[in-house]
Image (cartoon, rainbow, N blue to C red):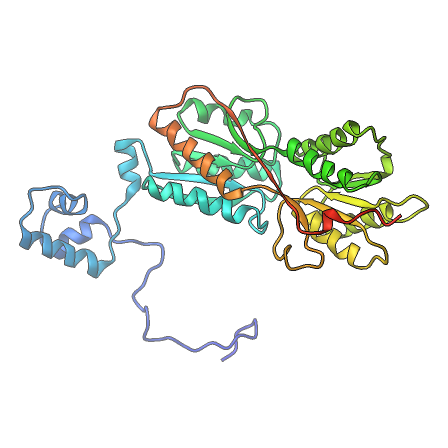
Length: 354
């Protein structure tokens, strides 16, 4: 038969007929099936001594038959630790966060902890809601890529002992550990590279100016231009949302007119992808350096020169610092800046076309 969505369905009258979703077997159920007391089940479940092999076998058979799982919430109340940490990302679809998240998870596993993650979608209210929901579930610590710029809502949680490390951008209005890349230095190096190859009219297209990384990369762009004694025209700079339509419009405006830019510095990977598409439509050669590496950057012709961050190292450093907080080996919050790396592939080495 077809359901209302048009999907083909097959009746399953003989399957799962006794299943009641949302109900789970308890230790009392295990004890009844195995014919033992609750304390005996507790000892088996928690690996405690004092149970004969035969009794342990019966209890384990009952556990397997019922699909019983230990309720770790009760253990939290006794021990005060959940062996879980929360990771709040900006955008799960952003390639930058893949290796970062994987590194955090690897460190968590090495410490016997479970990682729970979610996305704020660059919404400060959603970030706060997600962070507090994780705290309500008694995670031991948090790794947060902040969307907002005021994190005083976290003060009660910090005082209660929730270890917290911010990543990619610092926390707002509170003292907390932060691990980030040298956004200013990386952008300055990338723009200086374009200048070294003869460019003077260099455009900058970045993210929203309120975002720490975007502001720091713009500052690096300005510093490189100032170091070279090059005045910056307002028309060469564009910050805003990174959707393709806005970035395309900004790039096309910079590349038109009587004095178009001869090179573009793209403020992040999403901007770079759109700029690559725009430049492919140009009849003249335009140099490009992007902040953040992009997939297949080495296979394009020319390959895309980038200022690369080590997202995996950022995640690893943040997670290791989080567990050092939990172990009690850290006292004062620190700001840790990791270096970037300029990868030359061809697009940033093109000379000016005029």
